[in-house]
Length: 190
Image 1 (cartoon, helix red, strand yellow):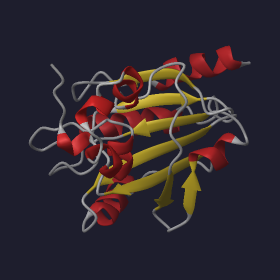
Image 2 (image 1 turned 60 degrees about the vertical axis):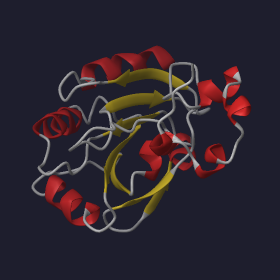
Image 3 (image 1 turned 180 degrees about the vertical axis):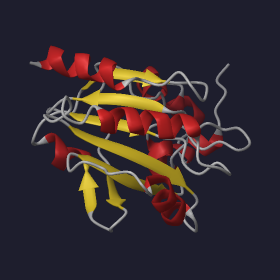
């Protein structure tokens, strides 16, 4: 039996007949990105309004995509710790771009994201972007559909051709990908 969460379906998927959604390729497209998959392109705004896209960043080298929990009624201490870990290892990540995605409701995500980065020095190869209304979260099938949650904390390494080479999706608040694991995965690309 096929059970679907309507919140994880795109508008196009919601219009499809159920027999179409039961096809193996359709079911796989509803799964979060995994190693070997082509990562779906996205364009999101940094806090200063500058737009960044995965495909644009990938032209210069690998891209680390870190999906944070965003505003969940408080600033997540595990998100703060993970972002701090990546910032601390900025020199080892110099050959890659790192995108931190902060999802949340459109009416407050900008203010809460600015509060989150307050006091942090974000290196030039690291991009802090917002995901208003969790559109990218949903596109990547990372919605944590529970009270007080936005997205599963996740980390991906995407190579220059857009293929996922490392993936960690946490089903709890902690258990995050440390920068050292991502650095080791980047070294294997060379």
